[in-house]
Length: 427
Image (cartoon, rainbow, N blue to C red; front, side, top):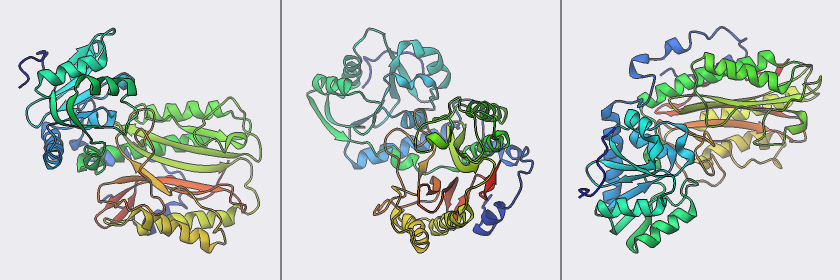
């Protein structure tokens, strides 16, 4: 098998609920030593970020699931999944990539030929097969699969990804008429969703970067300062804290654009009385730890203290509810119960948090609709999963407040990873 293929070379810091509440009243202390507290011996500074044995375990798990589903091979096109299995970390995922995972032996990664330098540097367990700028990518994929012995049989493919263009998918299907295609969108995800100890150390480092970014945003914000100036300081803090480019840029917006869910900074100058929305994440080795805060310029509107209390207690409910085996619906209901008890039963959210981890643009939750802590969801939490927890009360009719933090599911419950005070910020 594979003889006809090209032969390019292979290239428990645990915060209890009591500690989390206490952190709200802290001032912005010097957290410059936060990175030093991380167990750096587990980490490296450039891709591939993990030892060979970790990649071997990941691949062995995926192949075990392939065997259970009677798949002869699997085609993987989601960047986070390719990264998880091969270690490839770059901005080039905007163009077509396809990782072919056979039941044994080396994998094949099909991507633009111009990417060969980084492929030689980073790929730990896959053979790179480049396509030319004018080559038909579907034909190239069919050629690779046929040469590897997969012109027929049961092949898994990720149907639920924005990184497999319809035209290419249709071309592959037409070029291999004897293949039975099986949706394998969840095959790698089921393992990637749970972070290993090494992955969690990168996530903790990302949380320290996030803290530095948020402190910079709050310290810079004031009447007469533009959103652009805040964004500049956030980016400076991000890079200075050893952060890399995040999958989302920071969300920074003020009163006129508060409702723009995925809008960000403009050249608008902050004014007295503004509400100022901040949501951002550091990234280290592609792992993310988002956090959000709503800040008020000059003074907070009447009633803010009351809605703040509801918002923070609802967040506490979420932290208390989280643990291995708990469903997403259980967690959401814990949040909603506190909101309802405050006389706000009319107010509902589509989720109170979502899964995060390794990510590439355009989203730190991975491409597509996030795996959320939603009403009526039977998704079960597992130790090692990291969530961006959100307590969002915007447009409630009783004032506005918002906090969010990254948190990991532990065997004992939940550990909040980001640490800037959740208490009311007036700048």
